[in-house]
Length: 104
Image (tube, rainbow, N blue to C red; front, side):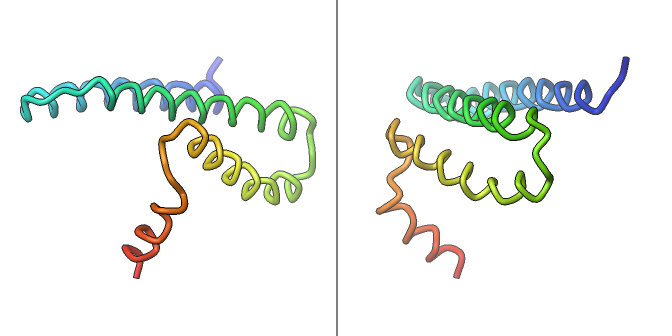
C-alpha cells in the first residue's frame, strides 16, 4: 500500500541515485576523482543515519508529544555536529567563524 513513509523512502532513494549520477558525470567532465571525497560522503551519511535511527527509537516511536519532539531538534543537531567533529569531517572552532562571516 502507498503511504507517506513509502513515499519518503522513494524520495530518499531517488535523491541518492540522482546524486550519484550527477557526481559521476561532474567528475568525468572535470577529469578529477578523489576517493577521499567518497569516503567523507559515506561517513557523513552513516552519522546521519545513526542519529536518525536513534532519534526515531527514543522519541518518535515512544509517541512523545509533538512539543517534546520539537524541543529535541536542537539537541539532535548538536549531537550530529559533535559526531562530525569526532570523525574529523568538520572543525567547529575554525569553520564556525567562516560560516558566520559568509552569512553577513
